[in-house]
Length: 252
Length: 119
Image (spheres, rainbow over the protein chains, first blue to last red):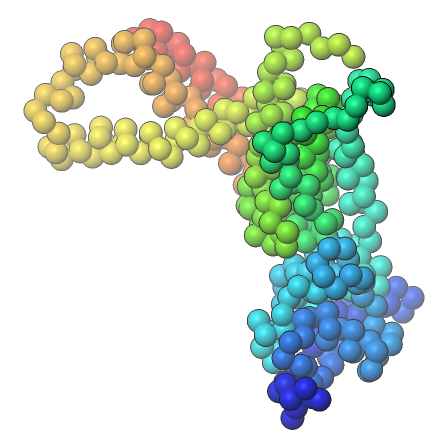
């Protein structure tokens, strides 16, 4: 069996987790057998199923180029960006489920409100006591100052790290890898003056110290952000900030 | 209790991190030397002679090293065991078990300080 370009098609069975909030009490699985082209990503197969076989299948996707962060799902039990994950890595049966550690809205679509709240909690914007006047010019940064945070700014909010994190699965209030990495990204930014506020958040109820350094977040991150490194740097900074609070009186 | 534990996190984490360094890097070497190599006769004669060892241990730096060997692994153990308690007994166990373990580590550390001072 070959497609129009001569590529060899391969039959695969997709075992997909389905959940309809109007009908189902618990999620169930449904199998689809389709002929896959050799160059397909997991997302291509899901789109084929939705377009050609079962229009009721719900999944999120948008850019198809690992930038938008919408198409994260658990593929064979591991959090993956489905547009970036080649089917060639998988066998004849591929299991696709929604990302773990999130409430499910429908089928493969997860509820991300809690995640967005955690994002807001770390104040992911540049905090300055007094904004420079426009005439004073722009904020300049050296390449070294840029390098201090650039890696942590590459996050696309795909939430794979939350699905992989064993602490997130046990401690719902834990800020989690992406949010801490983002907060740390602003703490490391030479233009920012908000580190004390964020360190307060880092030591608060969703504390960074809950991280047990399983490193799963960095394992699954499709953009090599290395959130585990960010968290552990954030821990140390939060401790130094806490200790210096005894020496230096803080102005509010 | 939960709030107190949360407020203690920075110092606990610092002691825990130091405990990992000491407990996994220094303590095995110490145990290997004193409890295995010594009794097996692998050390040069008189290496662990009382006067010699006392001289090292009672030196101010020796006292600090001894204190680190005694106190820091207690915090590592307490922190690990607290996480284990949550895994085995659930979240309800966190505050009581955590407080108890840190109290033990704190008492042990104080005893360690008294012991190295009394050397």
